[in-house]
Length: 49
Image: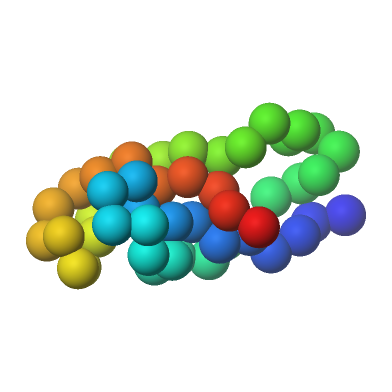
C-alpha cells in the first residue's frame, strides 16, 4: 500500500526528491523542510502528484 511521491520546492516549484508514504495511514499531503540545490537553501517541500 506504499506509493511513490515526489516532493517539490515551495519557492522554485522544482521536483527535487522522491519518497514513499502509506496511503491508508497518512491521508494528508506530506510537507518537509529540505535542501533545494537550485535555490541553495532549505525550503519547505510539499508533495505533488
